[in-house]
Length: 102
Image 1 (cartoon, one colour):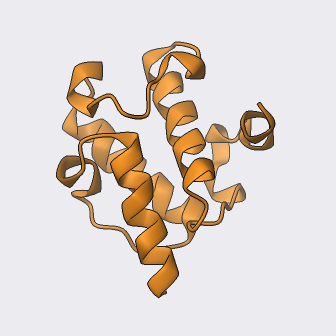
Image 2: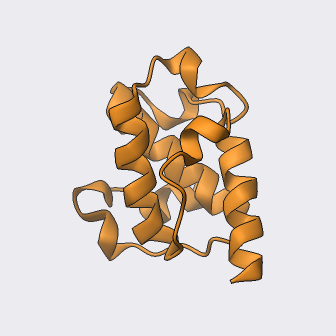
């Protein structure tokens, strides 16, 4: 729960929080928190291996989250990131790989 507490209550101004893109767990946790906020549920109910489409998230959410995530990890990300990768685990791996080469 330490990571959850580290980024808790950051979504009103996601630009104020920066996480290391190399840290897959931090990226996963941020995405869990963000999805939970959108779905109005507890972050622990968001499975990182579950496909985004099973949560019923729309394209507007995907584009918004990608923009927020760019600011949080301080990396340029493809607007199609959440479309090209099926789950939180996949997105975190892509971001970590991009961070390693930046």
